[in-house]
Each structure stands twice: as C-alpha cells, then as structure tokens.
Image (cartoon, rainbow, N blue to C red; front, side):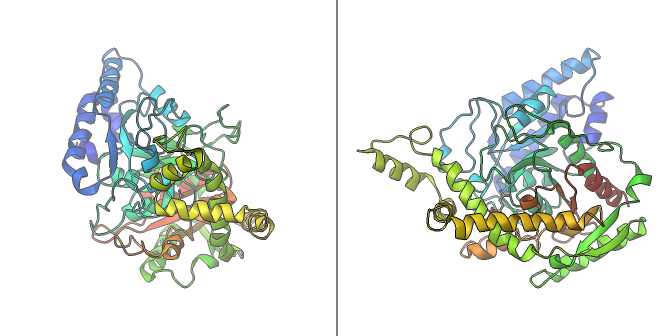
Length: 476
Ligand code: GLN
C-alpha cells in the first residue's frame, strides 16, 4: 500500500491491523515533504521531532493492544493561523515572524487528544486575506497540477499539502471561501462548517462573524472524520453552539439521503462563469439525477450584492481585529522615538499591501460619517442574503453550485487587480454571510486536466446532508 496517497480511513485500518506502524507512516510523509515541498512551498514550518514522537506513542498504544481513535497516528497539516502551543504561528504575516503560540487552539487540543500526528504549519495569504496564497509574507505556494498556477487561497498550503500527498488531511480556515476555493483548485475536498459548529479559539481572527475552521482531505468520508473530531461546543468560544448533533455523519443512510431535493440557484450560473466549469456542474447534476436525486431550480435574488457586502463587513471586522498588532504586544518594539512612530514603523513594515488596503477600507466604513451609509447598510443587506437561503431551503434540502467561477489561474495573473481577485470568491462568500455549511468536492474524470470543484451548501448544522450527497457522488 502506498502510504502517502492513502485516505485517513485506510491508514487507520492499516494501523489497526498492524500492516504498518505509525512511525513508518509519519516517515513516509516526511520523506515526501522533503522531496516535493521545495518546488511546491506548502509548508512554512515542519515539526519532525514532534511528529515522530507522537507516532511512537501511537505505536506503543497499538503494541499494548490498546484501542486507537480514527485519527491516531494520522499525519495532518495545520494552517499557520491556527495556534499550536510552543510553535511559531505567523498567519503568513511578517509582523508575527517571531511570535510563538502560548496555547493550543481548541481544534489542536482535540487533535492532540486523538494522538493525530501534526506534521507542520502551512502557508497562507497574510492573515487569510486572499484567494491565491500570493499574499503570503513568506513565499508563493504552487499548484501541484500545474506549477505555473496558484493553488487558490487563503488555505493554499493546506490544500497543496493534501493534494501532493504531503499530509493525509489538513485544517484550514474559511471566511469567504478560503477552504473551499483552494480545495477546488487543487482537486481535494474542503468543508466550511456551519458558523458555530467548530470553536474559533486559537484561530488568528480575520472577520469574527464569518471565520470557521474546517478540514481539507482526499475524500468526503475523510472530511467527515476530521470534522467530527474538531466540532463541538467550547467554553472559550461563546459563538460555538451547544448540543448540535450530526446524525448520519459517519454512516450516511442512503435511503434517507435519496429523499433530499437539490436546488440549482440561477444566480450562480451567470456571465463570468467559465464554460468548462458550467459544463462540469451540469455533468455532476446528471450523475446525481442518475443516482436518484431530484433537482429543482431556485433563486437567491440578493446574490449580486453579496460581494460588496462582504467587502464592507470583512474589512470592518479585520481592521478592528488587527488593531492588536501595535508593535508592543506583537511586533518588534524597535527603537522608535515615540509611541506614534512605534505604531507606524511596526505596522508599516509588518503588514503587506493587501492587509493595509483592508485596514484602510475597514476603518473608513466604520468612521463616524460613513458608518450608516456603509457598515449598517451592509449588515442589513447581509440579512437579505441570509433570508434568500432560508426561503430556498423551504423547498430544497441542499444547494449545488460551482465552487469558483474558473479553474486555477496563473501566478501573477490577478495580483495587480484586487477586484478581479475578489471575484474568485463570489460563489463561496454568500455561504459565510449566511453562516451555512458548504463543502467543495472535486468533479470526477479530470485526471489530465485542471481540477474543478463543485459546492454543496446545506441548512445550518446539516453537514451530514452535504457530506452524504458528496459521498454518494464520490461512490458513483
Ligand atoms: N479570498 C477571500 C478574501 O480574501 C476569502 C478569505 C478567507 O476565506 N479567509 O477575503
């Protein structure tokens, strides 16, 4: 069995049956990283010793005949805006280059309890602002399917780690599409959970009303396993919900799933959508119809406002969240002569151009004279976007849409035109505005072509529905 191309599920099976040891699995991944990552640039930091010592612990448990959970000994990669105690966490920003995390994010704590092997931290757009990983303060990550193309972003490093067999699964964060869009570009599965399903404690905040941590994996089944491990209420994040249950998450009930009606939103198939993407989604619909699903056309009339609303709310929240990088608590302190200079020097040197653009935009839309005209209005339109979905979910159970308007674009293609870059999230960010779960699944039969992802959007806390439909497609 080729260890690095395996799924989490089959690695777990093999470990249980002692076909190979956890140390062998971890070594295989570390070797693959050594071989491939100099060309791909998925990782910012590798924790070889930590990974091997966890693997050894798992092997001891297995040798003792102890039971192991599904993630024990499974090598995973963590986006570098998620904290691991005692390890660097740069969030892709130069301003955090010397920062060491003082505690574990709740998701990391949960993975550690499972004895998952944490291989290292992956590259991202600075503070998760971007759609191509070109905004990282450290390096550019490349798409393994074509090195001249971007992997998507902002969780580009996590998507590439999984796609190039340098991790069995990974965590990313999704504020407007940052898990789903890179998953789509790299041909892997990426789940953005319902807002409140997963704790945000220990995630470097971008826009707190939109951010969610979620899994990137090779299969939908693996995404369910990883999601199951990180979901749940956390007293350290009051927006994480109590008592959510995800029946059928691990063992989907086919008879029930086939009763689900799938909606196709007309507003997602408009000008600007690449032909190949549109055709692929058609094919997916046909396959799912063949599997017994009913389809229905739906309308989400406020979709056209979602991008503008997002680019008011996100910068507003980001400019507030990023105020803490003042050069004193974070940053170099430096030898500035007075407080104002200290702020200016640290923030001026530490932040890249996209982060500055959004801080300026966010501060503007929150300023006294413009708050009502921009920020309050955007909040009201956000409610309309949310209501569109609520209305649609009265007649359908799941929504099918493209993940991104195009396949992966060329490195450098959109860096000089921020608006073009922003448009690549037009189809994912409404889901964040509405707080819904969405999963990107690779369209099949594209082995020799650039990957294309399709998105399944569900009702709040109905991850089991979208992952269930995804699994049916995967099995066709
Ligand atoms: N690309 C989007 C943005 O730049 C989404 C980012 C994200 O989801 N973190 O804001």
